[in-house]
Length: 318
View 1 (cartoon, helix red, strand yellow):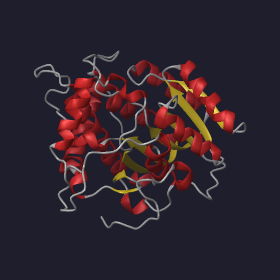
View 2: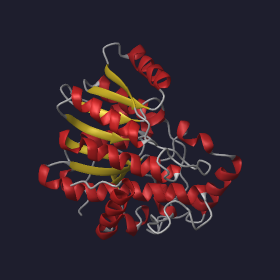
View 3: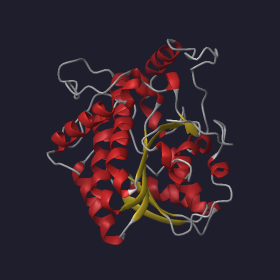
């Protein structure tokens, strides 16, 4: 895979990514659109003419986010829908209703997620982080796959570096639950899912990318206790310099949503990524070197995860 140059940087904002773009006639579906990165992504796309389906678990919060967007852009084309990624029945209802109203959508942005939450199970009995972040989006994407015409963006994280997926004990039935390990597994799963989806969608011309947005203080971090925050810092310091010899610290700085969401907006709209289908993206560029764990670029591992997730759901997808 050959890297390419772009004028965008790690400090670029969503509006800078979309400068001069007219997205009229395009439809984007965004999960977790009621706050943070999802809200900013919806705002920026709508500001450039796109029709945006804002999907979220809490419709009151979703409506409040839409009101904030319309306070600066009264003509924003926003459609609000409810979906709970921790409940497959909710996902199926959402997909069914969306298909009834839309013959096609251009881009699905799998943005919703939970982070380092206490141990819990989804409505279907999956470990909460793996079940919400990966299984929920896996099901949603496959239920909509035949009406997606352009691409799918799935949020991963630099936390994928914590660990690979565990297909032997995905629910921590044998091992002790570790919030950071559970989060790392789910973020690795997101990247592997995007990789296998790229392979499967290539014949139809549908692209797939995973995205690391950087560290953004949003509702996602609501479970971050002082102890968990200290543990995160310790984990980051353990790999505090990059392997490329630059001496640059790997401990990230906090970003505003308009910067954190820039890479997923770039991934969702760029015309320059077709030759990099399946890539892990960050800072409005391709991830590389020590930023990307080898296991999330393993095609066989990606296929194994796909088959494992189908088994969990009791359903096969092409």
